[in-house]
Image (cartoon, protein in one colour):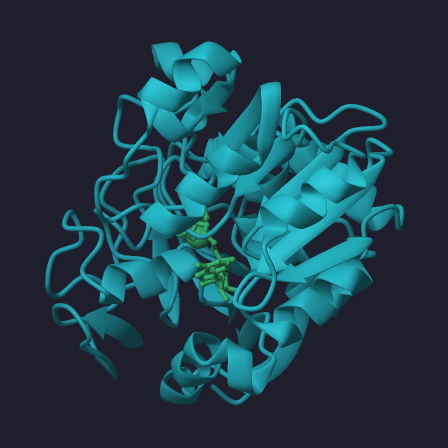
Length: 354
Ligand SMILES: NC(=O)c1ccc[n+]([C@@H]2O[C@H](COP(=O)([O-])OP(=O)(O)OC[C@H]3O[C@@H](n4cnc5c(N)ncnc54)[C@H](O)[C@@H]3O)[C@@H](O)[C@H]2O)c1
Ligand SMILES: [Zn+2]
Ligand SMILES: [Zn+2]
């Protein structure tokens, strides 16, 4: 089969590799019908995720058809259309029993395209298939369901729920890439007072408006702290966002997210960081802030599937580019140059003659 293989920072190629095989009775082999690229893949290519070794097949998002299943797989069978979650789960370890699948102790968690071969391929081996895949409601297309593999649960769990967004809150979202936009879509469910999107790219800020941000700030031109303080009617500099969500993964954006929040506010970090970040505790200790970090667990996937199927969350606007499965070079280039291409999610789908 063919797959996107990582060859060290800045290097990857779409090349011929051996087909995956069932290694454990809980495994399934899934034929990839649709896959996409995450900001995390860009971090990997930037050398920010050292656990990813050369030779690894990238990708942790897919919708596909079960091709083969080990003897221990009971809930999905060959021919089933499934969502392959970015998080695999053994379902039985201490963390999985608490729904904290991201921290699975038995070879689950974020493994696809990280510590085992991933989904940017014609076929993928999915460990613990029973607890790592989801049947897809008929109402959802493959591309729509693909938005639930990572970005939607990530924005919702690690941004909105960790940040404890409440009705009336001023929610600041730093970074309006697909994950930040998913956080905006998820925050909408809680009737916030304002959603303020902050990004360096005007194209992404336009997208943020479509997903429900009522204020957008290009922080290359405007000071977000000043805008947010104006919004809260605060002249003494003591108010700010109730919740700030960091969805970029750089020292500058994390520090900005901390600055934007009011005393007693909540900062939810989503970004994958490749470098240490300064937390100015000499300024912050007195402000009673809460900072959360998180790898997505995907415990919200069943609820989000219902919200998308019922139309309460519209995922179609996430998909800006449609390409074939062998067009990864163009797909990576389009996604990495999002400010020029206006790309959000680039969906790569298998054609029937492949
Ligand atoms: N915690 C998790 O489980 C998890 C899961 C998935 C993705 N992530 C991470 O979430 C982050 C966002 O993912 P994505 O797919 O949306 O990535 P992306 O690269 O498409 O989007 C990042 C956005 O940040 C903006 N940006 C960059 N520097 C900025 C700055 N200084 N100020 C304001 N905006 C800035 C960019 O213009 C871009 O729109 C990444 O760090 C990704 O690795 C985390
Ligand atoms: Zn991801
Ligand atoms: Zn587990």
